[in-house]
Image: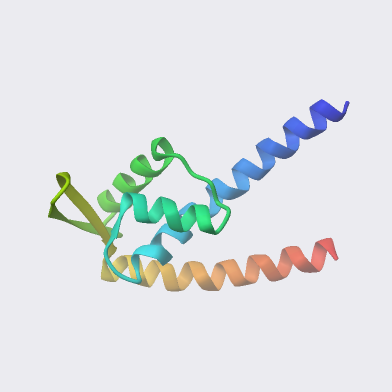
Length: 113
C-alpha cells in the first residue's frame, strides 16, 4: 500500500511541477537572455528538477507562440549557443500568470490549512 501511495505522490508532484514550468521559464527569461543550461540551473536551484527532454520542447512551443525569442551567440568552447528572452507578449502573459498564480496559491492555502 505504501508503494502505491508513494507512486501516486510522485506522479502528482511531477504534474504540479509541469504545470508551473511555463510561468517559471517566462520569469527566468524575463530577467535577460538565458541559455538553456542557465534555465535548467535556475530550475534546479528552485528544486524544480527538469530534464532537457522536457525543457527544449517547451522552449520551442513558447517561441512558436511568440512568447519567447532567441538569438545565437558564438561560443569559444563549442558550437554557437541559443539564448532565450521573453518577448513583449511573453512579458504580458507573465504578468497575468503571476496574478493567476498568486490567486491559486491563496485559494489552495485556504483549503489545505
